[in-house]
Image (cartoon, rainbow, N blue to C red; front, side):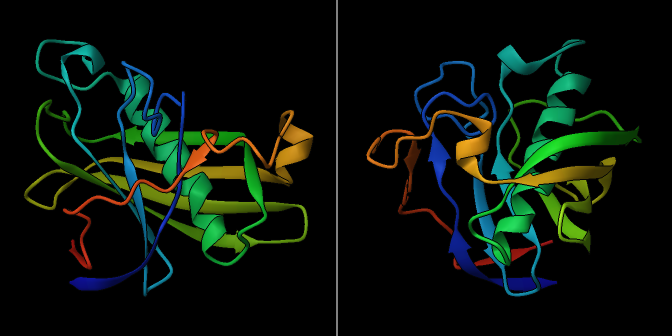
Length: 168
């Protein structure tokens, strides 16, 4: 199906998943959709491999953890998730140097925790890795020394190729 993009989320400076100044980063972009799911789009490189031409399983876990954890921001922009539990099922190898989509959604939302599911989709739409996760809700200032004046910490990286719709 095809879904309208309702918002693009921020990237950070040094995050392994979305960092714009981290040479090893996946440089994932995150898009909120009209169906209250979030999609990360990224292209894994040689630096992200385990076996030749295959994404490392730990990197797959990282992108799924980040994507599901960011899904809470669709409804609660001031909430950040701290991972409590992450469970994965590896179904198919994930190739390198191919644009991939990662879908995340919230399945349970309480006052202190939220839970979600997600999957990495291959270019043909097949799920390669499935995930379920649980997060503790926290404000950013409880997680780190947050300076709201630090304009490089969170950057809205608008790209000409940002999609207005995403299909999966």
